[in-house]
Every structure is written in structure tokens, then in C-alpha cells.
Length: 413
Image 1: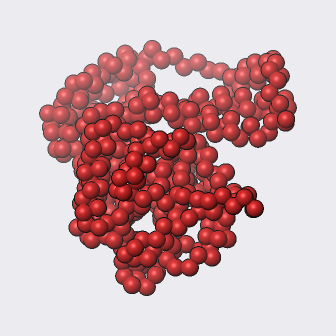
Image 2: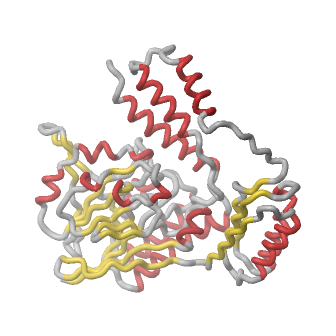
Image 3: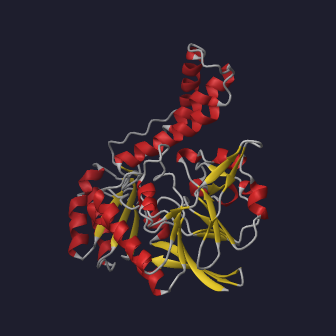
């Protein structure tokens, strides 16, 4: 039997603060749906984070419903799992609403086997193809990893037929260096015996045999435009219950033009002219432009570069959207303070030691010290360009939840 399906993940509809880019996340989803219809896929997988929040705006929800109804009219079912962004412990999410309207099917359903204290995932069988689909939801801070440890993997492996496992977790062995701090699960925790592993959560295009991360449908921040340039999803062809082809489908609504400029030793005026010269050499028509400027100006401050004029020039050349990152750009007012590499650590160590064990937490001194150090480290992250305050705060919260969850297990009753 021959059939094909689409594998989407991390659509993050509504993730951008700017209205134009927020609308672009919807357009990316529309484009993917149109392409799925045009190549006549039999079904679609969405491996988490269809929305950027469990309760998206009415406009975003309406746009998605319209596309899902197009698929319903063509008898193309959509199978999904909640991701770390659109999951809610209360179950009050728009995914549940979409399922009740029979526009999607959530496949992360399970029964608890009380005799063995294991979780037994249930399979959903696609009526047209007979493919058996199940999956594990994603949770904030990678907390779904605990579910994998009590998963009845033997029952999953023994199920006959063509099987798909959907998941929304990073795999430790496959994490890129840029995501080294992201919580992950080891490859050994994935159940064996599946024909296709439909991953999500990692915003990278990646394939290792039949384990696939399709990448985000639309880049979700400044760095992703620099590294990925465009969004993507996968179309998978199956022949005689074997994967015949896995094809990454690009979703490029706008060309990306990236400019990186080091301005060490330049005056603000010279730096501005160098940047304008870079822009003059580029075709910016309908492009998303990312400008990263770093280095130390010979005098003045970064704002003296008059970025508003630079942006105006880019828009005059037809750019769709322009954004900048100047986190490593400094002026003469930035004074480098030379201290020993360990002085900050020594101060932190002294303060921590002075206040240890003042509150009874059920942790040893060493455990409490490690907890405090990890919490301090979790605060040492910067807000990314284009990241909303809400998303940044949510990222901080996820890091804290992950750390606290780990140390709670060490508490002695």
C-alpha cells in the first residue's frame, strides 16, 4: 500500500510581538495546508505547539479553524499532540476545543496500568491508511521526561502494523550546541519498533534515520532567521509499510537578508555609513532583514548610529520587516571593569554560605547550595531579539520549574 503524510511542528501561531510577523505565522500555516492539499497527503501530523499559547487570540483561532475545515472537507485528518507552549495542566486549551469540534485528533491519550504502575499509550488508527499513531505530549521545562520513565514500552513495541510515534522533546544525543541547556531525554527512552518518529520542540531541521524534526513552520526569533532563514515541514512517502522518502518542504514567505557588522574602532558616523553601504548592496525587496552589529565604537554611544535612519533606508528599498541585535555593541561610555575571573563566584559563594540552612527545606547543605547556584544561573539569560516579554518570562519560569522539580526529589521527608 502506498500513502503519504505531512509532518508539521512548532507552528507557534501568534508568537511574534509585531503584528506583521504575527500574521506571517498564520500565513505560514495556510501555505503548509495548501501544499498538503496540492500533493494529496492522506493525513497530517502536528507534533506540538500549533499555537504559541494554550489560549490564543480569537483572530488566530479563527484563521486556524478556517484552514482545518479545508482539510476536513477533503477528508484529510489531522493528528496532534500538545507541546510545551499550548499544553495546559488543566486541560483547558484550544486544542481540546478543536478536538471536540472534530477538526483534530489528539493522540497523546493513555491508560494507567495500576498493576505495574506504568503508563500505557493508546493507538489511534487512521481509517484510510491503517497507520497506527500515538504520542507523548510536551510539558514546560521538559517535565514530560518523567512520563517516559514509566512508559509501557513493551506494549508499544509489540503492536503490529505501520506505527508512528509523535513526541515534543529534545533528544540528548542529537541536540545542537546552541541548545545545550535545553532539557532533553536520552534516545533510549523512546519506545522501539516504530516506523516513524515525528519530533517537535527543537527548532532545527534534523533527520537521523526515521527520527525527524521538521523545524519550525516560521522562524520564531532573530537567531532562527539567522540560522534557518525560513520555515519548513516534511512530507513522508510510504510504500509497503516502509518509509520510501522523507522530504523537507521549505516555507519561505519572504527572502531573508542577514547583515553582520563589526564596528571596532569606528566612530558612530563611520559605523552608520558602513551599515548603509551593506544595505545598498543587498536586494531588500519584500525581505525580512536582520542586522547584527557588534564591537566597540571609538567614541560616542550606540544610539549615535541613528538606527532609525538606517531602518528608514531599508524600508525605502522595499524591506518587509527590519530588526536589529546590538547586544554586543558598546560605546566609549562602556567601561571595562577588570576583575579576577573567580571574584564574582567568590562573592556568590560567600553569600550563599552565610545564608545556608536558615530555612528548613529538607536538603543537605550541599544540596541547598547546588539549588541556589542553579537558580542564580537560570537568571543569567538575556531576552532575545523579537521575543515578547511574556515569552521571555515564560522561559525563565520554565527553567525555574525544571530546577525545582529536580531538587524536590532530593528532599527528605
